[in-house]
Amino acid sequence: MSQWTSGGAVPPSPIPRDTVVDALVDRLRDDVLSGRYPPGSYLPPERELAAGYAVTRTSLKHAIVRLAQAGLLETRHGVGTRVRDYERLGGPELLPMLVSTVGPAWMREVFEVRREIGAHVAGKAAAHATAEHRDRLRRLAAVLRDAEDASTAQLAECEIHRVIAAATGNRVYGFMVNALLNAYLAVRDGFAHAFADPAAAAARIAPLVDALCAGDPGRAREAAAAYFTETEAIMIAGPRRPGGGRG
Image 1 (cartoon, rainbow, N blue to C red):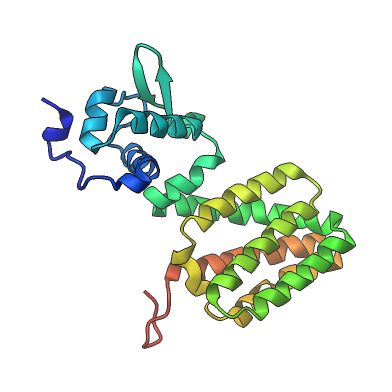
Image 2 (cartoon, rainbow, N blue to C red):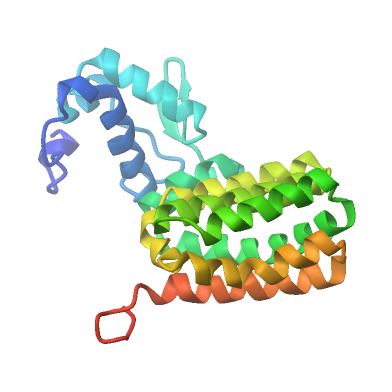
């Protein structure tokens, strides 16, 4: 009996034809990351899988190739398509998929690394920032302060962190920070409340920008740790309710 007709595993609805490959990538990815197909397991045969999703085998092949390129699947000729042990073998490019699919647990770990790596990167940046980096940081801080809405403020804050990473002079730090930011941006709408008051958000990050522009590594590390801790607490607490509480 097909696995699609047993145990309630039938996909909830046909995939729209105009976005078939993108939608199929999303659904198959979600099925893998949610544990329907655990690491080490093989996907059902292509004909059966395509029928279950109500797509053509050609569309399915395209989706499998994209998920293989992302590091979730591997295809063995004559054997089938297997789910990779992505936690052991995967890289940071998987983080946006993970936080948007299985969410909170991964986001907590992203925040933890953000605090630890962010403080270290800030110290390096303070020691190596050029006049151009410092000028860019000051201008971005002003953009954050004067932003017209939370989304604009949120993106300006992300750009500040990219400049800080670039100021270290080490491109690997830039890749690491980009990986963390990409994971965060995948679910950023859920944290936009932390930037609902752009002026307050700018005031929170001002000590870090000041330390960086002063070229003080120790103060930059301390300011970064304090900033990430405070901002994370606001993000996790959720938006304020009309009565003043959070949730």
